[in-house]
Amino acid sequence: MGGLGTLDLVVIVVYLVGIIIYGISKSKRSSSEDYFLGGRTMTWPIVGIALFSANISSSTLVGLASDGFQTNVHVYNYEWYAVVILIFFSIFFLPFYLKSGVYTMPEFLQKRYDKRSRYYFSLITIIGNVLVDTAAGLYVGSIVLKLLFPEISSTLIIIILALAAAAYTIPGGLNSVIQTEVIQAVLLIIGSCLLTYFAFDRLGGGWELMMDKLDGMLAAGEVEFRDRAAEGKYIPSNSKEAFSLVRPGNDEFMPWWGLVSGVALLGFYFWANNQFMVQRVLGAKNLNHGRWGALFAGLLKLPVIFIMVVPGVLALLLFNTLDISELNYPLASGGMCENLADCPNLTYPVLLFQLLPAGILGLVVAGLLAAMMSSVSATFNSASTLITMDFVRELKPELTSKQLVRAGQIATLVLVVLASAWVPFIERVSDSLWAYLQLVIAFTSPPVVSAFILGLFWKRANAQGAFVSLIFGGIFALFMILSASLDLWPYLNDFHFLAKANLLFVVSALIHIGVSLATGRPDPQQVAEYTYKKELFTSETEELQALPWYQNYRYLAVILLVMTAAIVIWFW
Image (tube, rainbow, N blue to C red):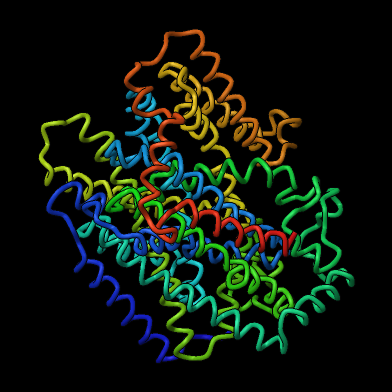
């Protein structure tokens, strides 16, 4: 393994100190709206880049490279599917979110249903932010820094990273978070392009050579890090199958039916209901900027397969047997990693240290750590917004705007401690970081997605149905988790995690429908203000006629869909 030189260390220190100072200088905290939503003044490029940066965080970089290394190239399905979800979100949900003037997604549930649904969803989202987004970001940072500074304990590294992320989040609020995210996104894209270039350079050729070498490895059975065949799971036999986005029904990671249903379900929650992501669009200066920003984020997702997934495949070709025992990195099952096949989560940092020259290595590592800080600070801010606006403000409505900001800052400190404490459990849960992230979302999101979709498109959906479905869905999800852990119900345990997500969604929706029909009709005003109707589409069509085509989000959405379809067909 390579190491950091003096130049790299200087670059990292200067960059990290500079980004913290920059973040603090961009703070907006004169009011709660400034602190939690950046004053609702974000233009579309800022919204789009912030969405992309928050999504393509350090944990995603590590997760995508890891799955690329394991020939799970179809992890890219989550990326291109985001385009479809963002278009749907822009057409149907975003107008209601911005018109309602809400600070949080749970607050919107209250406007459509009642406070019970708001409090439940807010609590679930806060827990998810700590267990998924924040802890995963800290975990990735600890992996990289542990490789750089093995003499420092992982606990101390996690604490340092958490405090660094909180350094500008606590004083600065959402505007500081978003302004730093823009810089991180640019650096991440540049760093990913450089890493891909140097990986192909080390390979000694381009795309065709990569595919030929991958064919040889698969044909020779040299990809041995997963004993999938013994379990009756699908294994790609050649490079074309490895890069195919549509896999057979027995694929371990993403069968074709999961692509059709489960990916859309998880994506809808992540992009349309998750406070962590939607908060950036809530800060848009108006509906058009929010829509343009969402579509711009979708456009930025399309090249991800080339600059973030492919490097993982190249690592398989270049470093599959690389001896990494000197790192003393522990296996989840005990013992130490001998090579990358043992610990695929190390794929991205191994690529960095093996391929990048001095100076560039420092810059990319700084970008990775800064991206970690950015994603962690974003989750701190979104979770503190939920705590403050959904609980503190409701319990103490007499608090002033400045007092609410102070409550948000205190909440952030508490979250720093909780997220840091959870990090050590992530490696024990799953060898694949990406699998961990998707697994948690699969068990928490379906009941929420059901409540949002039925609330927007079905006038008969009422508060009682929403609350009962959310509670039952949560209990059912907990039962499935315990069943898997304790082997209580083997038949259910054999279900793919995407099948479990689909089952959760269907059960929650049926309960919501049944209870709503069995109880009273919802408030007519709630239905009128927060349920989609054809008249909205007609009136919007008239408004859009006054705009040139390149400002009409419908034309832009069609162009984006065509580009997405071209990539999907290429890798079909």
